[in-house]
Image (tube, rainbow, N blue to C red; front, side, top):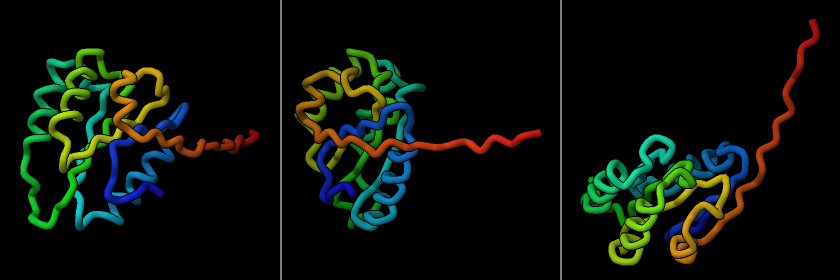
Length: 137
């Protein structure tokens, strides 16, 4: 399980995101009192023109509840973030992440800049295997 208080994470799950989703839901449930959670999908919002304003707004927000100690953002499919978007994130992780943490879900960790990787703990998620049931007619 992931630790609390959380560091920045790179959650590496090749081929899918099923185990990462399961762990994310469990973590949100376990730490719902002391954390505030947000999600964004980089497969949809991935350029500096769209992601940067959203991220700056998110990181500047004051927690909705007083007891919230840490705010956590998970960026699904972070390998789709553009180079300039990753540069903006790198600078933000350096300067403004005292009470905010960013988790990156990736299927290929080599797509994230080394500067981001060096600020995160890389966690290899278990491989989800599924054997389909094939019905014979």
